[in-house]
Length: 250
Image 1 (cartoon, rainbow, N blue to C red):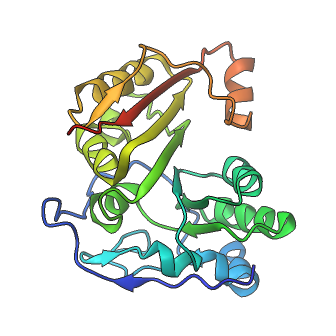
Image 2 (cartoon, rainbow, N blue to C red; image 1 turned 30 degrees about the vertical axis):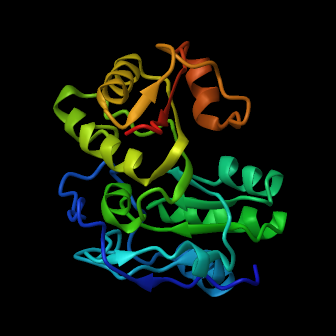
């Protein structure tokens, strides 16, 4: 990786000033700076975007805004994957679509390390990783209309009912994602938990900035078959895809 990832401060969108999410949608991060993450910083530091931090090492300071042109060294359509895991999806996509830029949002240090290794082995230069809470990133760090696509594949289902409040997809998050999308931009999601799939469908349908398609979308052929989907199939769970686009008239 040769192109450095630069970031600049800025002013959050006035209509969406909030950037904190007290109830996080993730349960583990792997520690602030563990051995794997330290090795990534030493060998693949140019891949990582380091924002101004707030109250924790996964937070984004109020007022910090991603400058994608500086981060990638060019202007290109931006695709954001929320919860990129070990990078199977985003690295393959970056290699297949050099005309696009890809931003991986992840808090799990081992996943970030794996993504960095995959990127280095593949030789992609159009991928960056931001270690941050997605709620905060979409609430203020991404300018309005700056994202061509958002991918959220197999987010933590938080299966117990008392934990449902920690699920990533909720009305506030949907509003923030829609605001960040360009008109006509697509949000693609997939989950193997039936009740979460229903919640996602209902949330997207209720978002006035989004236009949903059929109840369930066909499996997107650009989605990589990851270990999460294989485990779901082995357990007999049905994977549901949901998709919505940013309305051009709203």
